Image (cartoon, rainbow, N blue to C red; front, side):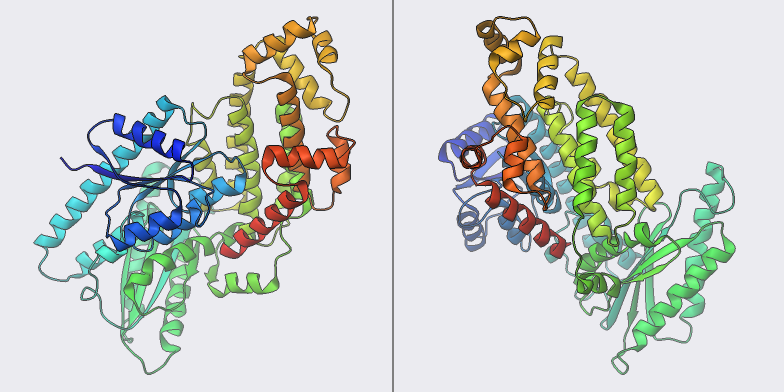
Length: 553
């Protein structure tokens, strides 16, 4: 039996041993091949001892090397699935974990039943990956000649199989030497520009676009020493790879590529009811660089949301945006997001929708898709955190991942707004459904506390709201929520303080006063006790992470 080789990385020995016991208890197919106290120790052991790994279960924040850095470095040489465990609900950690390829993440303390359910899903993905690898190996053994069909198959696998380890593919003799240029061609809208189509007609036009690509390449490449490959990436989306076996003119391949793309775009506009946007990458000489170029083009195409469709977007566009020096997300974006959160908590759908439309108006003024994406991710995770507070996470743990990928597949700003609004309405309904399950008196108390965080809040004052004895109410509240009244008030005040600290223009003493702490020193001491750093340290770290993430994007 081929086991699932797993390593566990966590700086807390008790948690590390507990995870190891849990994994082993799930069946003989699970094999722990190593446990480590930090990412550096794990990385060096795996590399030096050539350890094969199927699954990495790791904490996010650790000394020496954190979990995100460890996964990033190990993925340069190994192919595996990553599963993050963290006690942090900061949106930057979750966003980074998703970008590092996490198949899932789970918050501490670990629930055994939920953990097993998630590992079963990971197991299924590992089995699918092994089956795919087995099928690929069988195909490669049978193939004896390098043909165009085989090359297209390899290229297709490279672009749709995200978990394929490129170092395992022997491409050295599969493709010619020379300069390569990759382009991504995508229809701008599901509905054509001049009429509505039936599904059968849509299939006909998809076939027509394929013929246009084929004929354009045939006609345009007759007088050039250029080879081409094109393949699908789902309906109405296509990849195009060009290769010129020439070193005489450094600009020849670029000129040829842009000429072909312009003619192709023009032909599709003329002969079909659609427009297309094209992302054109820079030249590269190693065919194995196709994967990194693919990811850059998918990001480049997101400028369609800012500038509209029917454009050819060149890689220099991203470089120019970086050179301009983005000022980052305006404070007004954070304020609008918090207004949305407020009305969701108040279960006022009309006001939440109005705040959302204002939020969209603010997004429409941003000049970079990376800023639009970051602003949306901020809102998505704030809403998801509220849902987690209502115990909704265990019901649908992948719902945040779906939202994070929303911008990747949007073809216009209008579509992005529509899908975002649809997701948020769904989340509002889920949150309200979970909130209504608690006793009315508890909901009444929570709502009152949320609305009076800046005031003097006493147990007697709260208990009087629901006509209970203060001592009995304290016991009643903890039995229904799992937390004491004092801890709940402190938690909500400090959560509100974190939101306000993410707005750069607010003073810390004003934030302290607005959440009910009139002694700034006491507020700072309490904040550090709960969150591990002072308010000013939290603010500095937040904006440093935000700046770093924009550079990475």
